[in-house]
Image 1 (tube, helix red, strand yellow):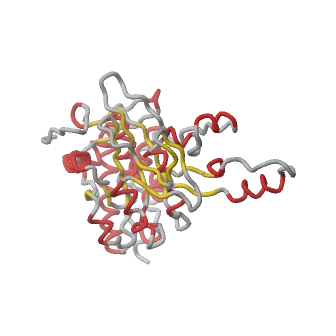
Image 2 (cartoon, helix red, strand yellow):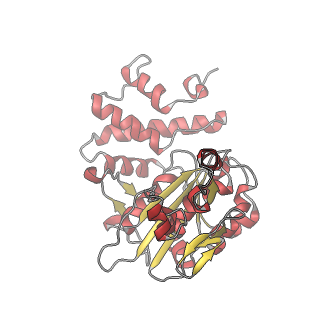
Image 3 (cartoon, rainbow, N blue to C red):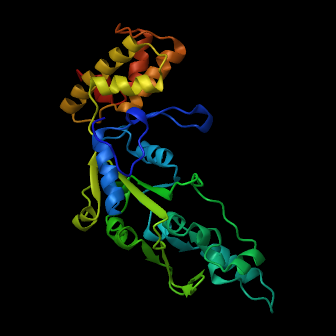
Length: 335
């Protein structure tokens, strides 16, 4: 790598090494990635990562969390995801059940007991999220101690504590959601549902806000497959990173880090076949295979000892159709 990051703690050569004991897969950073992450950290802006499926967008968040020694939180967006899903929502069913089960002289539990903390609450105020916003004595009385929903890491001696927050596949959301996220992304705060409040040492508040502390860092990474145009107001608040489809040398480099004892010639053959399929996909206007599919093909060949044989009914031809040429147009290019 030619760029030396100021905030991103890249390992030697820009490669996150494999750690089987911790379940960490290798990740190869590019200069463009390192620069964009450094800019996002310097400006405290969210990083919007675009690229074709399988190019490593989601894994980038995990890799950054590992090299920084930070906690990782993630949520994959769907068409059913709402702002409350990501911030705080009321469990009305639990509240109704408690109301029906209480005795004549029994009171309902405190309101906060019925709040489900979303991923932004965990990122901004993890201690409060564990207690659902209840005061410590109330949380103890009602036995509220939620588990962290991601990977939590305590900072090493002399390191800054931080969190990487991954909002995955934002373009799967309903059109209003990106604009709904402007306040949490811009001001790092959000309002609780009407009638609810959360306890803090300086009193109860109807909103959750990340503390203004130089000792805590947050990097929000948002991914998009570019299936839908995102609002301009949303884009203006983001640092943009596009991960291009890798060419032959980078494909082989990535595969080599995942399988350092693997057959290099076979990796190069698979890389060239993937590039051929990519051209076909562009001509047929269908999705092309990416890095994830190539790694699956390499792993299958390594585990099973299969050579890359282009014969029409070879074992490799079946692997190619099952792993690389998933689109019908790629399996039957003449039709």
